[in-house]
Length: 343
Ligand code: MET
Ligand SMILES: [Zn+2]
Image (cartoon, rainbow, N blue to C red):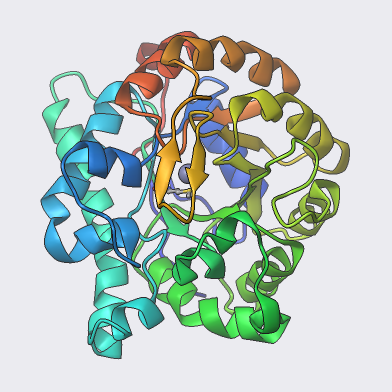
């Protein structure tokens, strides 16, 4: 069995959705996720113009990653997502690192997040935090590793075979699971094939940590490759290790309809962490600002998403600790009356 249990743990054989429901309940019925990590690292001065994107900070500025995790925790996040989104063994090797060093860098992303959690809990030890604080190990798609924008097209050309994708992600998944996160976050999944590869790997690698599957959409109906969200959510629903299914890095205006589609095919907890509504121009490698929504507008959607059935809510690219603070306030968590053993 790969993975140590943390953040409240639970029996190893507990199914993923049951584990997430237990955490959600301990959070008073909702959990707040963090906001954009990479874009917030940039806002803190990091230069991420590199194929490793946010994972570059694992090499150059781990303290900055820890700071951003802490900023999100202070803003009220219950879940922080590690800087491993674009961290891959293959990506580090192409920078000249050995396999062992590359694996250590992956594990380091989880260690930094755990450290931030420990610091946060210590900082608040006079009035101990009772709600769950969880570390989710991010796994970005093969397209994210390619760093050519294909995580927003899901078009992998020749490489788009099930076996290739499983082989690409396998060791990375094992290393991240062994580093002791509470959850595995398969984020920004652009196509059905990659979802299938993840499901098979979770079983074949005997991963004992609950995972979430989060897809992205550009039209409010399909995921970015054009594959049907309903089919993708059905694949996630078929895996007992998947604890939650949802949408990330997608404009807020599309979320309502997407939640309704997911609900048609699964009872698993639903998670939502949209981007700010701006569009990423993959060629220019920049966010196009005009269509973004303000933190206030973003939060005006939160009630609707809750009514639709989302129980884990946060933000993705270009959302900030202020966005998360606003979400946290609006979810009105009753921290003082909650009880859950942390880590
Ligand atoms: C392109 S989506 C990126 C997700 C990642 N968790 C981040 O916020 O950096
Ligand atoms: Zn994003």
